[in-house]
Image (tube, rainbow, N blue to C red; front, side, top):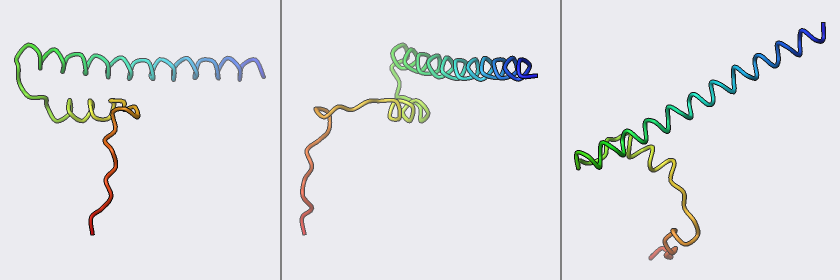
Length: 72
């Protein structure tokens, strides 16, 4: 009985891992297609492309603007 549960858990884990890899691959393919479209046609990015670039971008401490105090 415990062997059957272990096999079922392994099958579910492999299935979920495949789903995660598939979603990641589709995300990378979509970003790549958007970048190719922008560079080939020389047009502005689409809304989805701009959002994905904004969400997936990284910032370091050097990239952040300096904080300014509020003027009151």
